[in-house]
Image 1: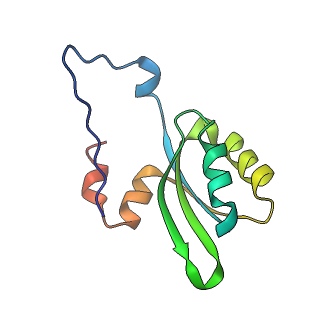
Image 2: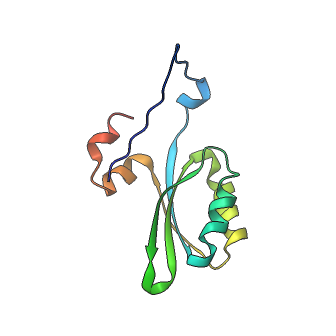
Image 3: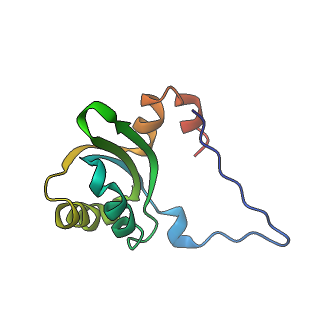
Length: 112
């Protein structure tokens, strides 16, 4: 699995100062399959937060979501999880670099 990001630009690219300071984290959350869409919609309201991977656990009727979020949003995202899916399981919270290493993408961690 590879991660890629690009942006078309037809002019000078400016980087906002707050974007340079963002510390990215990845949170693993396991929820019942029937609640995954509800949680994804709730996460859409959290700025700069998104689902990286959605991994179905068919035999258990669950879905594991890998959620990328700014470190400053950890409390808000966990609150959304607990409110939307009280039966969900909050798993590991890890820095972006550890997430990349976990998926054998350690070399990519040096570039970002």
